[in-house]
Image (cartoon, rainbow, N blue to C red; front, side, top):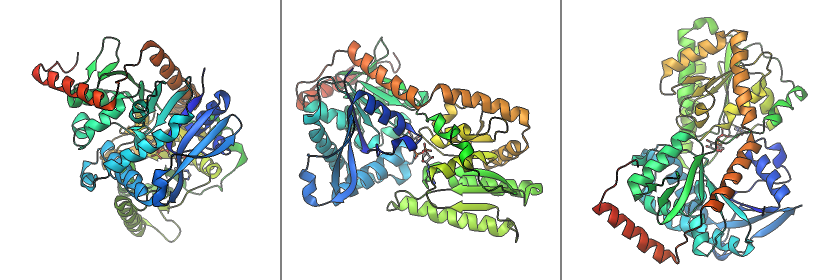
Length: 484
Ligand code: ADQ
């Protein structure tokens, strides 16, 4: 078994990764055990001349090395803020209406990926397994192939894949598809995402499903499968007795989300307001605590959602609040993880309402942190990837305010026996499929996929383009059945 090489927009701090509780723990552990390298952006915004840099800064942590590169200000603007967060993020979350296609960010997005590929290429060894993460880095595998890299390369997308018709609206969808086809294995969060990507590859770029289940596109054969991202369960269970939050006189309903327009926060506030309107007996007895740390504040859509939430929470508190009771506690800050675990544990309801979400780790963290003898109830949007797995939660449609208000009532009234049964089923699933299992299963699949599939590497990028066009032309002449 060779080294593991990870590439993602940001790298984890390997000296602290064990406290993170998410996938960083498993990735950091695997890096330490197998030895390896993690390449990403340093988080620094440097000079224009940094655009020429392909010599990363290195930090060693035992067997593992972290390599980072700065971005120039215009790279940050176009690659990170622009194409990644103003095009791919909204489109992949079904928000074509706010995607900034016309801004011409793609070229620099591609160039940053080329620079990262150039930086990585001389550091690679023949037996390395390469694992690229997330939407910032879609073309990276293709750029490595263009440099002659034949190692197994896998890609994991943390966000959802939109339906084919939405994907097709991206002006550069064909270029992105060609980038995806350079991988040996694409890991997605859910089966719905797998279906969406396969539909798109068939409809958009005439991909074909082969007899062994792999997909042929752009003259390459690749596997696409679901690997639902998981948590380090013990990081939430073990730390519970150590911190005891102040006992609340009211029953807490909890929301924990980055302040993002995909997380359904206005819908959550409106549902809580409707609940208070419909069930006045609960006045003075329940509290919605919403922890929503800021992210991507330079993106306009994020400033808009912040303003909307501040207005909504003010209006609801003004309408229902009393001198001794404020119904919504809205905290626009990051919270130390240990405190977060305590708050999870001391909340009767975990209220998770995204309009679209790759997975949603908060839902899993909330379940893991509950006291099994007296657990709280998870209310979960059907549009979070986690809903495919966490069926014993109260599953809701975040667009249906009435249904969510009633789910709050049901969760608050649920008897202990039902709460325990639901929690036990949820926890055993989360335990069985933890972050270590996730990491192992992706890497095992990557290594076996690339063993069973000799790489069909095009001789040069222009040759690849020629063959892709030929395939498209042939498909136009003789259109294939959609699902073969
Ligand atoms: P996110 O959109 O960030 O992740 P999520 O999966 O919920 O969403 O993860 C958020 C993480 O941040 C959780 O671990 C949570 O504990 C932490 N967090 C949230 N609020 C916090 C606060 N105030 N203080 C401290 N920590 C806080 C993206 C995708 C998801 C996918 C993940 C992982 O959008 O769909 O589940 O990646 O693949």
